[in-house]
Length: 320
Image (cartoon, rainbow, N blue to C red; front, side, top):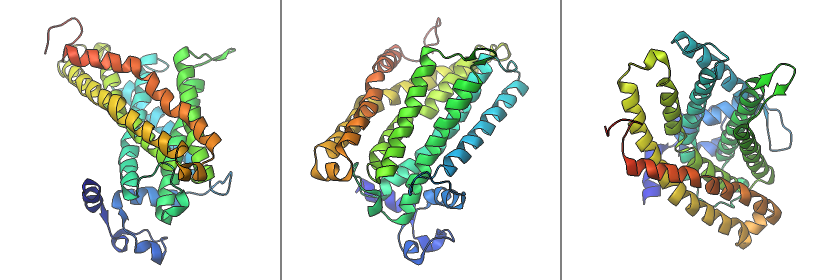
């Protein structure tokens, strides 16, 4: 089957690549080698447990590293001729570059983790091998760390006005609420030890178009900079990237997203195993987070469909 083919191409025996701190039993269990950095990074990071299962040390480390990365990108942009901070375009593009890194790193890990075990949204984490439990905690902690960093740097530090505090727009509040709810979804799944795959599949489908979207936003801002206005390749890259983004966004938000959301809703709430593994009240609390993002995508879907219908056209110019 396709699932078996992917496993064969992505996996090999642990006795060839196992981390030194894996047990003998674990070394006999095949795991995707692409997950080895996640396993090693999570196990080597000092732990700071807030519950028996939930460590926030890895999230804090990731938040710190993303902050350093964003500041570094900001200085890189200024060295390339972008306006000095706190110019909004420079701040925005540095945030997009950090977001690109986040999604580009997490997507292969999510794909490998989801394919490595039988897919069941309501599944219990304890039914999986120890290395998979560490991968799950690592990926969710990594994403939570990104949410922490972006909430503090993007919506407190960079919006701070002396004597006033952070000045937030409606869009800022929308992203903050998204970050808080996403983090609560992941943390609660780790706390009850089940439902983690429902969070991971939503993460994968939601993040799939993020690298393309961030490239689109970076190119859009680059075209507005005086240093790049005479460039011919940036507008060309922008319009074709826009088409690619619109295509994949529609595919994932019209088809794959609702399909996955429907299946996990059924599995968590309407099956006996789902109700046994995850408290019903918690599954019901997850539903607005699950379906709210899809419903909120409708205006974007309409824009993307119009973009595809229009074809590769730069605003105000003929078709390319």
